[in-house]
Length: 130
Length: 135
Image: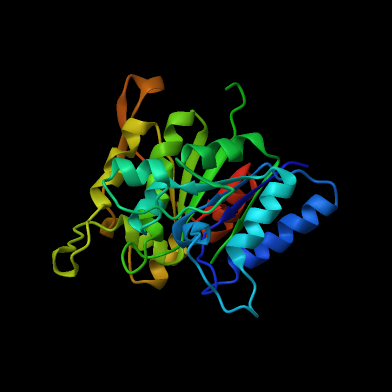
């Protein structure tokens, strides 16, 4: 089965990004496909490469980057939600005249159309959030 | 895109206080370009999103409630509001904005987009969908 994933709450504050991660790993292990994960609302904060949690804690962004790299998952961060919250890739930082960018490897910024498209193209859409 | 799916956007939260309602509406507006069969559901505190005469001046947040009246232009014409959620909050249909669309199959007659449904009917509507996005 093709499963699309939405993560709609922020990392560490909320368990959504962790539970989604474990769900995706399990789904893949069972032979399902997870072509895309869409990060929305505060979920976009998962994609910052500047997060530095204590060493004895899980690193949510790195977990996702590794999982996506291993399985070719498209990690999409909503551009409108990201820009509100100070998350920019290099292109957007230049376009907006900002002096830094902070999107981690394996994530890409794109539009909400990617969420709708995922809903159309997958067999199930599973949201992790409140 | 040939396949048309039934999309339901479920709105459960008050319009202000958190960003869920506003960012839900942003998905609806973008999603309208995909020519899917779109419905919106309003229940729990989500029914407050459709109340009339919203004024956000004193909280410094944009009042986005007029945008709901533009949904008809995006062919988003089914706004289901749960009757029990209204009643539990002391609201009735007359507290909600008038939201209409022009029915192209009926000589562009102006028709109401808001449909008040019972909790049981809402469950049936949800069960009938292909994709449910909850905000």
